[in-house]
Length: 435
Ligand code: SAH
Ligand code: SF4
Ligand code: F3S
Image (cartoon, rainbow, N blue to C red; front, side):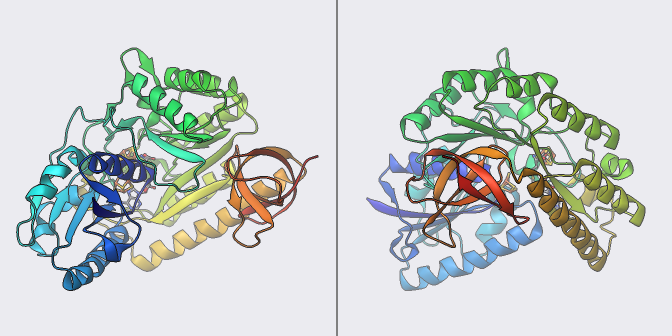
């Protein structure tokens, strides 16, 4: 057996893909190692979504090449979104032996077979059909209790700032039979939670099955499994999905609903296909069906032409919704996107930073307020393991995705326990076990 080492960057989709890659290469004589110094093949599954994500990978390529200096037969591979975006450019560095895009992983055994130092191999062909539906992923154990299942690939939206449609190609949905089968395998393998993944899960469509249908199918086939999903696009999230969520206890009360901006002018420039009003109306619908549903978001500060007024609209929509948590970024121009071609990246970096800091400060307060509202409430929590701070405490997430910590030496990872919230910080709920 040869030894394969993979570092995974970017979104959950990449984690799921790395698991597919371990499975594909496992059948061709490669076993996983977590020790880079014994690896025959060193790979990074990469992200292009922001410039700093790419800079980080370029740094890792240097580190991988130090391994090559000591052991010249080692092969270095770049996989995923950055492979797809930069293509041959990566080979021209002379530091990479294999470049494979997100739809080219079935060709990895062949690429590896043909590659040798000085003889690089590349496959960045995108596909309209590939979903790796027949591959049973080899789980990279994050905690042994929660697994990712990708239900679709690619994206058909063209948000003007976003590189994903270029790196991942056209949207396609995976056969629901294979999704339910994989969920069953997870459950039989001891997993207690799955997250269904897609760039826009509400546009899932296979035969006559939409996302609401898929969610119902999985929830009913596996009542003992806790189900999450990501990402919901505000333009597409349907009442039917909310109805299915509210009528199944094993679907977690959490929706990740990226808002990106609170300004209609900016949303239009971003080519997001909703308005502030529409977004707020979807939030109201979520709360009508599930008053206890957590809502989290993504936001971009300092998009092209964003004024102080637009920025204030973003702050005010945060305030109005009262998000439970958020991923917050400043705009990073991505070559080849519509925004890069049409709009100057004209908000100065200091202004982007300052606006981002204001959003973060506001969200910190909103997260704390949201957690304070949970003090006194009880939650069923899936135990992930010992807390980092204290080995006599356990940690795990409530259905609303909040991290809970409580003193406990009786339970273990994978157990469901009922806890009551006693206190909180902006990041954590401090709890006690309920008798
Ligand atoms: N499909 C998901 C988003 C995937 S990318 C959706 O539509 O919501 C994850 C997040 O990265 C986005 O929600 C956005 O907030 C951020 N992002 C994407 N492109 C970016 C860019 N060019 N600069 C800064 N942040 C960006
Ligand atoms: Fe990017 Fe928009 Fe697609 Fe999300 S929906 S991946 S932000 S193009
Ligand atoms: Fe990054 Fe590609 Fe995911 S660009 S966010 S790894 S889809």
